[in-house]
Length: 195
Image (cartoon, rainbow, N blue to C red; front, side, top):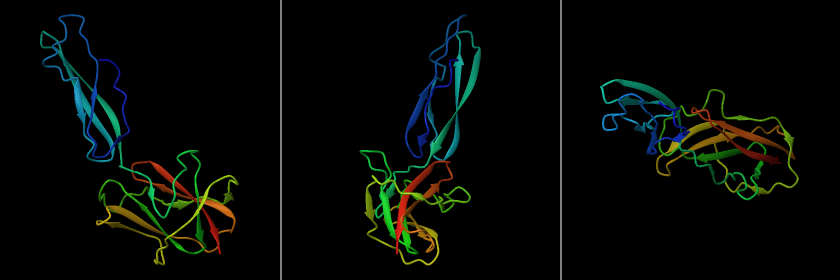
């Protein structure tokens, strides 16, 4: 066998296949019975294995297993939160009122249950100076929840994490909301706060 074919991370629910190379310097490779192309099971997040089988023309066989990573189908934050500027790659600063509850909306391609966050997340970074050249956008929508909580909206096919911001954040500095998912991927949005 050659090296495991490169690939991934693959998106949960996507259709994927990988092909490995194999050869036999003796009787030759039996291409009809060898299994050198396999589909990748992307049903669940995490590691998934693919096993290949090579057979030669005198019935000798060998298998090898390759492992791939499957991640949630993350497509970015939805409004009212702005993602990175697609032209510059810089974070857009979302301006929010101190102590408000920000509806953090996103999709994972369907209802994945409520155990979607890595333990200890979402969390908020330490305060940093805001980049003076960064674009800013005031939030157009707030939630009414008094504590941070997560729910799934089946009508909109999206998650809503109601983030209760701390009224003690320093005005004029920036913080990042860090959303780390159970698949190990990390997603950030930048905020500054006003009274």
